[in-house]
Image (cartoon, rainbow over all chains, first blue to last red; front, side, top):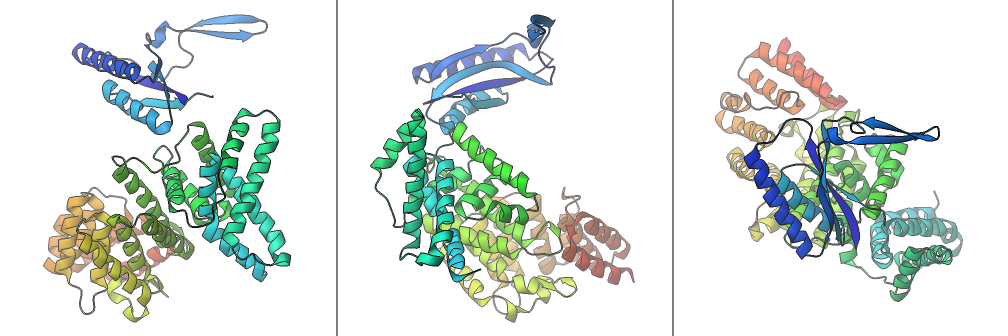
Length: 113
Length: 401
């Protein structure tokens, strides 16, 4: 078995239609439950907006705190699921379902084992 | 090159894919399998010239490679590498295998052509692992610097290992999609050889031959897939005209080619394959394209109405502007250049040299000479191939006069 990070890549700025958002939340929840039922679910979560982030950098023996995300981009990490499956094909199957549920690009990336 | 060297090279080309495929299954590690096979060939280059070529060269390579891989794993395992210890146990259990093991190579095909790898990477891996071409040969064929190609292959093997791209034939429900990807890779190798995108040669024969060899392998591995048959037939029929495609003045059009110089064996084999496809009754894009090529090899004047009918079928299977463009070329022969021009005018293919060349030819034939010259210029500007440019320039100059 191997663990994969499924990252949901959200566009930065703009707010989606509330009705659409509710539908997406329902679909994602349903998928989350399916992952648990199949025993592949490890962890999952949705993140607050990048503007809520704080960055820490260790330099010259102290840690500098900065407001905002590490990098400004057209897309940002909106949420993620971690799954434990046999191989990339299985990870891509679950990732495809997440892409369908969210309507957003999903990056599938293996953890070091 | 000595006789033994030549034999090692021939065995390398013929057996590399099988040896890597069998060892990958036994060891569960494609990178290790490939390295071991590589080392076995190095040993062969040293030993065969003095000891003579063994009775079963393929079996010798596999046994030697397997021994090397196990030695390597033992060294790693001694350093308490858990992965190596596990692999070693697995490798010890497996009896050495010599005979043809079709499924292993089929697994390798689908691993090399996995959709999680970029298409140029799929092409490189297929040629490298399955075809046994050297990195330098592949780099040369695709006009890419050798270090770039080497890096592309190293990264791909690392991704296969780290992301766990599975080493297996896809499930039935995924097979049609995945097979389409595999056939596309082989056809890409062929077209890269057939119309070298840049450079002075119109054809890179080595790539065409390699693609046909891979096509034969796919037919051998998947005898029930009519599209694999169709692809092989298509490549053979197109390749049969290779000798006549380029003359002293550049590109020679199909109608002007000397049919007696077409490769009769390839024509016969291609036509026989097309007939086999027809009997299956499960048409697909490669089979229909092969059938179109087969019509062009019928004796006597070309039956253009049949070509148009086949393009209608192809357009239904693959509704793309490039297919529509090719169909228009056939329509011109049945209904005249004016009718074809009306079909071509609105195609969204600006910048594609074949589009401009076809449009130029049709404009010339309906007598719109000034517009034809403009289109020829657009076609010349859009092609990087010297032979095609020479042909287009020559025709343009006859229109201009």
